[in-house]
Image (cartoon, rainbow, N blue to C red):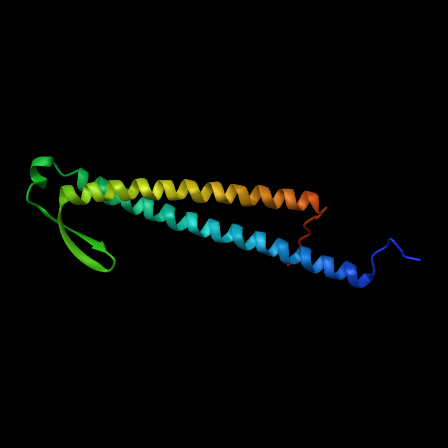
Length: 127
């Protein structure tokens, strides 16, 4: 005679598996949020430098030196070269941010689907 009711041990194992899956979702989401924060910070820094350099009149930029840190090495470039580099990097960072945001939204909706499919309710304890 087999019973349809899971044993206490099976319930605890399933609970542990669900907790691990939930924790993995939370870790992925937190990591992606950190990545977005880092990229947004870099974008803001690039915008500040770009605005500063482009505010210089084109005729005053000619022959003017500008230094850019690349891989820990300070490189001597012209202002116009650095403006072009910043523009390209800004485009790349913006694309990176969009990609990470899509991944974050995918993970968040995946978590919501997982919660719904596994009939999981989040209960926060008194802290």
